[in-house]
Image 1 (cartoon, rainbow, N blue to C red):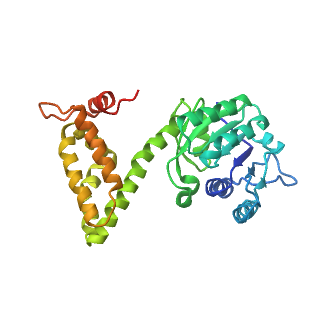
Image 2 (cartoon, rainbow, N blue to C red):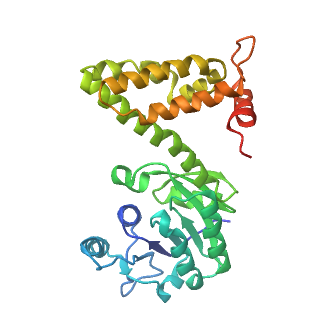
Image 3 (spheres, one colour):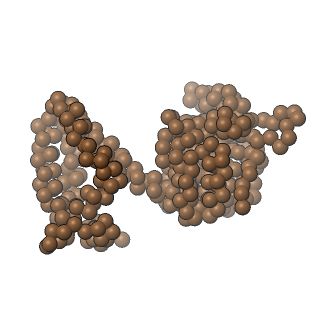
Length: 310
């Protein structure tokens, strides 16, 4: 069953909301208030509680009006006109937005939750929307709206998400159907962030030290093996070989920490890596034959004997 919304409501008109509105308006001809003579117009409306409250609120109001998007600073009955609601508020405000929107939703309206939330938070958002008769769809934005606009890659999950993905891709988005389990898209984004934000923090620690030592090009240049294998493949390889080489790598990180201190860099991330590797050593999981296990086997060993906690 395909969806064919005629009115879209955007909750939040910051970087994400305005980028989506711009993409829909420019690429799809969506606009704000209906005009005389319009025949079943495709309309955009927006709600942002910061509207005209401060400098940012004034700016987002101007941005909405420039796109001919009808914007309001509170949740009003106008929301009941929307067939499709796209929530793009900050994650900490996601539940408040869902609870405010739920009583006003048109029965069966699709509610796309683009907020950065945990799986549990997604469940809470979904419960609020479903209590109002809405149809909750979990969406994880995997790129940046600043550079990519409406083309920022998205993962979409939830009951009936395949029809939503079909509509999104036909209307300028770059969406991928992840499955029927709501919350799974949000979890993928969160777990990706473990890696990406971790690499970001590691980059700060390593590259500041490299720059101070005058060897930044050399440090960056020695990462070619990651390029050749691919980032995902490199991460998988490190996890597999961690089973065998945790002790040697732990010893190396002690010297790394010493190198950073000699350069005047506090080894915050390096100390955490030392602690993580020490945990593996203490679990005594290194295979006697020295063979590297498959990724599946490595993760099972690490989950049951090292990370534990379930």
